[in-house]
Structures are given as C-alpha cells and as structure tokens.
Amino acid sequence: MDSWLEANRALWDELVGVHVRAPGTYDIEGFKSGRSTLRAVEVDEVGDVEAKRPGGFFYIVEQHPAGNVFTDRDGKLVAGEPYFDVGPFVETTDGSYADRTAILQNKTSHEWQHPLSDIINALVGVSLRIEFLHEFPFCMFQRLPSMVKGDDGWWRVPGREDLPFLFSLKASKG
Image (cartoon, rainbow, N blue to C red; front, side):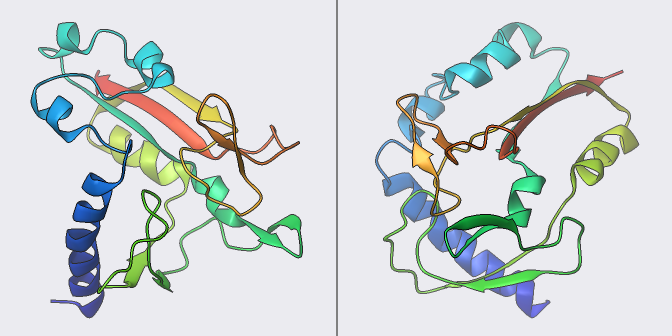
C-alpha cells in the first residue's frame, strides 16, 4: 500500500473521533435517527429528500476548489497555491476544521486539488445530469486567518464577497 494512503487512513480514522466530539459540528444521534443535519441553505437546495429517494441523486456541499488558491500573506489575501492538480499537498499539523485545538497522533495529510471541472466531469462521466451548481462567498469554518464568522454562522473574508469558498452541486440520473 502507498505510504500516503496509509498516512491518510490513519489521520482520517483519528479525525472521525475529533469531529464527533466537536460541539455543534455533527449531530450523530440525530443523523442515525433520521433527523436532518443540513443547514438552511442546503435544505433550500435539496428540498424534500424523502420524496426523492426512489429517483436517487448526488448532492454535495463542499469547499470550493478556487478557495484553496488563496492564502493570507502579510495581512493581504493573495493567490498563493495552484488551482489545478500538481500532485499532493502534504501538510503536517494538529487539529481539524471541527476542532482547531485537537492534538493528533497522526498529523500528516496528503490532499489533491480537484478543480470544479474534475468534479463535474466525474459526475457526467457516470451519466449523471447536473441539476444545479451554486457557489458561495463563505465557508463553514475559518479557512483563512482573515475570515470572520457572521451572525449566520458562515465564515467570510471581510469585503470579499466576490470570491468562492463553498459550492453545492446536485446531479441525478438523466
């Protein structure tokens, strides 16, 4: 097995516990009992999930790949990382988006950049029809040090409502 895969599996296994324990991140018992854990913006887009189960669909709300390009440098937001896949980003750090203070035994992660075209083409490649793609100028966690949490719970870069940090996409069998 590849060493990056072993490292990622060990990290992911450890992060599951961190995410479950983080207050307000996941409602595990609610999920198991069938209660929705979607945020209002997600519920508006998905609609009545129960009524659509027989038809089946793919739905994702995820960090926008363009947001991975930006970094805070000397107090300014700059494009500091590639948008297209150039191989794995290797990061060694404690914490996660759910709990930035968590001390981890497995600290190294290997991540690949997936441009939006890769995501859409993967779905189209298995004969799914894209029903919508929405992009948002906010994120579900403090992705950059300059981000500020709003009253609505979303994190934004002040004065930069023109940059995508989150996207949602729905696809179904055509």
